[in-house]
Length: 197
Image (cartoon, rainbow, N blue to C red; front, side, top):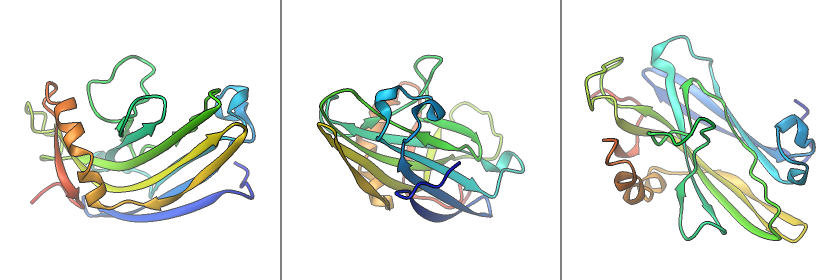
């Protein structure tokens, strides 16, 4: 991938199941919509990519991304922002797997649009591989970062990506808890570096 002159990077260290890791966030300009699978009018909008290092070696590195987004055309406040091409997801994760890559490249043909995202790397609580009902339905945030942009006509102003705190995660819990209560998901406050006591 070509490094763009306007590309910005952010590195966030973390610890999960005793593994020391690093999230590398790349924030740049979509100069090739076809490469990103976007519409042509997506040219010039920001993209965000976050990679997890080191790569997964086993079950312990199963983690995911939960993204909360505030969009000026979708009412007030932050809401869950899921990408699920197969239909509505019964869980809060945007992506989940073995050190999954996060990617987002929002764009619109609206003349004016504001997009702000809080993106969190999260793991599951409970004992490793415990499939008992309810035991693996606790979401633990590990780290987070904010990013976004504002569009006015043809002018697009990016919001510099910055780290988030455990308090930022907690600010979304009053929304997340009732949203996923029927599916019996729970959400631990603050940032966690290991799911076990």
